[in-house]
Image 1 (cartoon, rainbow, N blue to C red):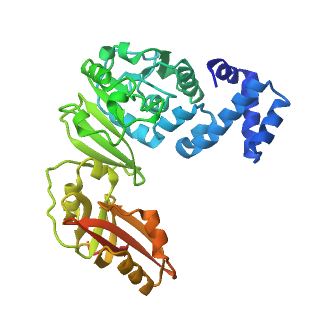
Image 2: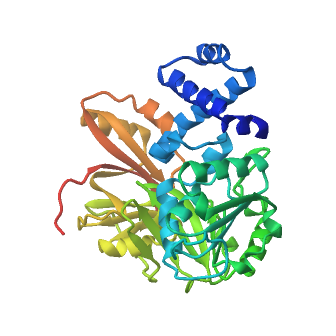
Length: 407
């Protein structure tokens, strides 16, 4: 979809075509039938644009919920856009900073959060959250189509008075006049997703130059960002949503640098305290820390919650004789511990009549899908198999979800 086709979707005729495309897809029409139906009443280009947008809205429902019904997307923009729950968490932190600076604010608009310069704004997922938190946002993006979509999304959600979106080069932006710089550099190139910050767009040196000129900043980055790319003195926060690590954010200018893990939707947060977990033998319970805590190198802090030890100093599995309910880790009761051997593991599962397994692994080179086939499971019972390494030796732990608490 090009810029002209998208602008046509914003006209009365385009909105009508989009509404029709949404209904056709909701009724279950296959792509060929849907295209034929649309072309009977609309020009081919408009029919194609409306169907593409209707399909993207359906995909977006899982991420954006009810807002998806009125928003606009591109495939890459939808993929890279922040989940609203994560964006809202970040926007709430930004609003709470109390920083103030010059920047856009509509006449008569009540005081809210700081004025934010949003570079690389994409389709506007973050600027929507910022505006809803009361932050006036000036957003720039290199791609004219993306800019038009972000502007349309702000209008569709009733936020135009707080949002100004323009085409521009992030490298040329001046963050000095704003309370905070927000940057979400593109992490996708011609060959697909990139995990190297030097291949971001704009590149990491450009991003850091913007940060150096901003009174405060929040950078959205991939969860796997190497630690050496985190600026000295910055806070690095990893965010997990319903047990899945979604992204990391680097914060500058807002206080001492710490490592932080945050769980959503609860909002629980954990910061580095210097806790170090000892290693020890397998106890009654095995804890699997949330990925945000693992990424933030806070496994020692999680282990302290249940007076636990590590099975191996380099692997994030915690063991303890205490069963402590915590959202920072999944807990399993260990029923068997054995050096890994396919023959021995298969025999143990057959003896226990296990027909369904959940296989988890850390520090193991075993191909999980190949193992699942080789086990030749048969039975009515279920089991959790944990594959790991203890002192360089591969082990298999048979477990079941913990069901009671002793505090």
